[in-house]
Image (cartoon, rainbow, N blue to C red):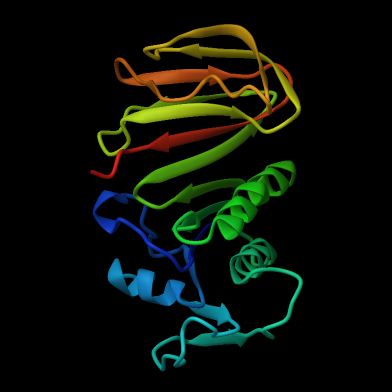
Length: 209
């Protein structure tokens, strides 16, 4: 089962193609309710401390109110809830628009979910973010995201290769202090990105001009 989590912040809905289907679970985290409605999506569940969504809507079947002072963000709680309810694949819609501390926290969540065998993607319409470790992934060329970058999530990442990119790599070593695999482009239909040892973030981006 897939879960779609809509968080608060700025989204560019015209560039977001990932949308829930009938059997998917849809969760709005606080003001993410507004982003869901902006995209024509009705949440099944609304959670949050309602610091940014001032009035509770009446058209959501399940509402979970959280305390203002807590150990996790609304989006983190929503992600944990999705896992408990059986989600094996999660899309966080928005997740990077707004406060950087929340955006970075969401990126770090990708690592924990990956260890549990759960695929998670963060999508805002300006960025699409994935995490992999000790494996490879094929990135399909998408007109909405001109660039892609490969960033080391660990202190040192070994055996990083990029095939099908404008700037290929072969068994390169990336470090957190020297992130040089930035602003690449897919030349044809897809790019193959592999890493032998370590975790990497793969970020597809568009210039918002």
